[in-house]
Length: 593
Ligand code: GLC
Image: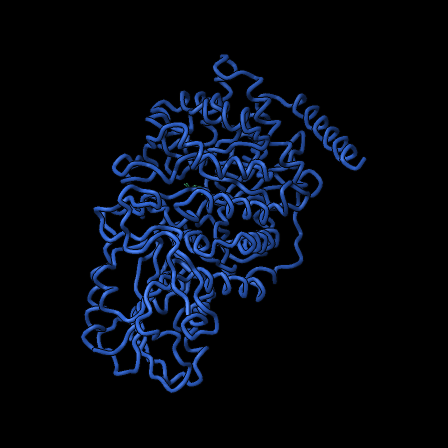
């Protein structure tokens, strides 16, 4: 009985949307398919003028004063424009909340996915996404471009840290948990935050040297046969669809030389018809532009391939395509018959049905009362727990760990020890991330000072030049923040500065621990021989105290490698299941006390 009532309600809702769509003009329909980054609006009244269906904040696209109330005002200012149109269709606002609500100063920043993959704990990941959704609702936003379902194979890729694992089963189970966390279960509800499974499909398996947009590997070409593409890379999307994911973002990469943004077989035939995906498909940032040098051709091919919403997103550079170009050329394409009206109607119907499901028609304007949820203590505790569980202990000679909290002088060296920006990594406050106190948090050094009985036992040397005598040295080294192709690397060697610090530390002939902050495994075969203990903490986010929790033994390390750890560059890409698999540390490796 209940099922039939639910069925009747959803049918009537669908009929309502069908009626609304049938009343729309071509301009209104194309407007709904257009997504613009708010920084590139020539004027916010363009939302009304062009019937824009979606606004996004790309990395760093933040209100002038970056705090929760400003986000709500920004959102409502745009929504009022959309509600002033003839049909009053609400817009949907998307943002990359990929490891917490990471564009917002004061938000809880959780470990990036590579660390969560080492917990292999779906319930933890679901809670993290649910907490992120709470912080998004507190700022008025509707839609996150997450989870990333990349199955990263080549650690030289700058987006390796956005991947949960090289193993498709881990990516699938954690990706599904994340969708359920954002959306509040396995179907959309009126207060769901819309999730976005990305990037469809194969982004983590491109061939080094085939990158586009001047990147080495990012946005490159995938050369797998269809069976492996389906079994390893389409699988996480298939399971996310079964769990109600409401949107899917198309990947920049190609498959056998054909751009995914124009791939009718993989989008329309596989994703929509075979896998029965009934949400809407969004392009990546100017992703359609890479299909063809002629923009109108790119528009026609991408929409006919099955893309429903185009992240144009506009630009401050007058030479780039803007949203008025996109709209004009898309309308032309329909009028000349290059894109059918049926295709446009189908795209708009998908978009509006999702907007209705998440309650936008009912409550388009936001008035959250609970700003205190942003960066709340309970969320920070959850983040600290996830930092503990992400850490992977790779060496512990003579069980030198855990350390005692008193009676030991501990010298902590390296700038990564006291740098919130470094420990958060990319996609934090700005697109590429930053350095120092970019947002409130607890550095690794702070965490140690809070843990010991006498803070005089902790001596910090940022550059590691004059390392004081101590009972123990802790060297905190690693990568500086990057995002996307900017993080593509030919070599995963430690930086020269880090090698110099470790040389100085080694010469002290005092026992020492190395803590590595990185978005991927790095080449450490020599360095790990000389140290007494080594722990990989990935990109832990704002709650650096979770690392002291493990080092002092309040909690045992439980993390297991979600990515194989190579010995040398010659081995990369190296993944579990490879012929003559011989990593420094295997997938699944991790010590405990
Ligand atoms: C970026 C990324 C994508 C992100 C989008 C919006 O280029 O590829 O992951 O969601 O643009 O910021």
